[in-house]
Image (cartoon, rainbow over all chains, first blue to last red; front, side):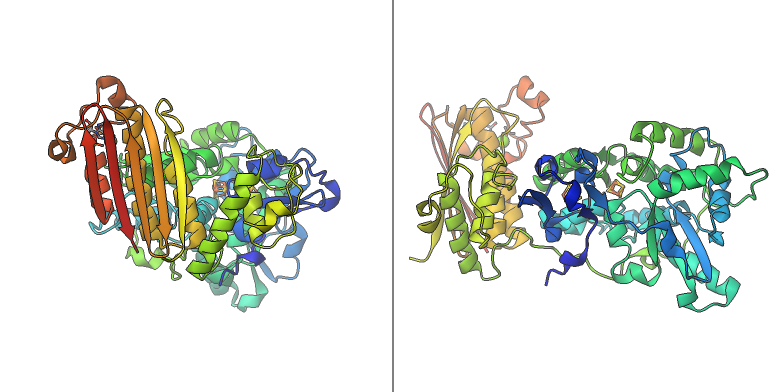
Length: 412
Length: 140
Ligand SMILES: Nc1ncnc2c1ncn2[C@@H]1O[C@H](COP(=O)(O)OP(=O)(O)O)[C@@H](O)[C@H]1O
Ligand code: SF4
Ligand code: SF4
Ligand SMILES: [Mg+2]
């Protein structure tokens, strides 16, 4: 069963949507349909890349992050900032400013996602030492890319890194630490990831990750509040624990740099990612150990829930990390950091579970397509004529604006 | 005879950039039907190589695809220069592609060997100066 319908990385504020089809045209998985003048998301196909949020001219598409006020009610609150957050501030010389700022905002403690990232790097390094590992290994850090592979590149699943996401690794450690320190029950402790990413917002609150993570907040909402607190800080307590490699994860090539191999390829931006995956699918990427793929431009600093433009944020992270040494990370086995749930293909393009029935539907879909203008104009509310044909065979009551006659749809 | 879907594509011989559209469409169609990912990947790789060959060695051609409940049959037909020695052409690394083609990232001489490797049956008919037909079959 595909239970993806309850994952909603983005949502529509319907009264702001004017049905302009900008988001529908940009969505890499054809997850958007304009129905009754409003751009609805078919959630089972949404990878959470945030493209629709970035492109919407009226601000009607929004990420489903939790508001800061949702942290109330926990006796002990731990904030987990992502590396991208550090890139938002001008002239940041020490991540402790951000971490102290968070405490001033009302969090009792902080735990850096960058610290979790360093552990993931160490585990990935070990995983790459194993000669049986399917190469190139595709990083599992970008949730949108992972979703895209499960949806459009099922046969590349053996390449996907089995590692947990840094947020999850960090959250588990943060929770253990908080429980030790306070003696509180799990329900009394709030673990809050602060992120740039629509895909992560929904991913981190589901499945196993939900055991450790209570809310997922946004860089965007916290930025100004933090800035205010940071400006008032006199002597920040030295709270930074992560080193240069963890901080680097916030932008592209950051993860790969920590692996000690030159045989990696790093690509960012969803269209570029698709090109690389197509090459891998065609068996064209030989001699590589690692693919670091980010859906957002420049990596997570390009996530839609950031404030600063990605290129500037990336430059800032590069400067910031120079002030840190790589942290020496010792881990036991890689398996400690691997996901317990196997990756499952999502089969979202399958028309029916019965192959013969699906074949008949496919034939009908192609026959309908033959009669459509094939201009992909989008006026019908589907991103391409083929997508309209698909919607029709799936039983949706939709029609081409320019071919309205019933006979076009009946005889398939 | 059971149900079958027949697809037809013109493969433009001058278009390096969008080369691969036919195999892409076949891939999507097989996903719609629910073919196993492993079969879809084999079809995608082998058919893509066939398309590339028609573009770089034969100035284009046509692709005919027939999909049944448990098999995919692909015929790649062109009226290009033909292959003089098929056995030699099938050897790994053998290529007659010029420098200009290699610079574009093609011409590694692995196309025909990979088509053989990833398909369950492969047949080549070719006459110098007349053209080449390659038939590929894939079973679930
Ligand atoms: N459709 C075709 N028409 C003419 N020659 C072909 C065709 N397909 C393959 N060949 C010949 O077979 C050789 C090997 O093909 P292939 O294994 O695909 O390697 P490559 O395309 O990299 O050269 C080509 O270099 C070419 O001489
Ligand atoms: S977040 Fe990305 S995948 Fe989801 S609807 Fe928006 S553009 Fe499509
Ligand atoms: S690049 Fe980062 S912010 Fe963007 S979708 Fe991937 S994980 Fe999220
Ligand atoms: Mg070739």
